[in-house]
Image (tube, rainbow, N blue to C red; front, side, top):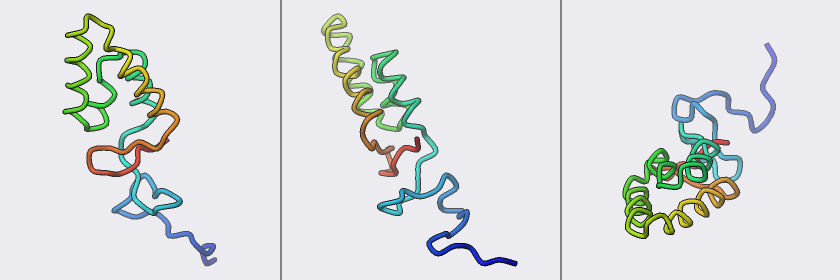
Length: 97
C-alpha cells in the first residue's frame, strides 16, 4: 500500500465536495456556475435564492418588480460578480465551481 502525497487528506464526511485550497473551508453543495447563470438569465434574484440568500433574492425580486424591470440590472450585475468572484452560500461555505 502506498502512502498518499503530503497535503492530501482524502474524502471527508464534513467536506464531500472538497475544501477551498486557501482557506480549507468545505465547499457548498451549490454551484457558482448555476447561481451566476440563474442571476444573468433570469434576473429576478433566483440565483441568490438558489445559493440560500433568500432575503437578498426577494429584495432583488421586489426591486425589479417595483421599478418595472429597470431594477433587473442589480441581479444581472450580481450574477456577473458571482461568476467572477468567490461567492458563499447561506452557511458561509464557498460555492463550488
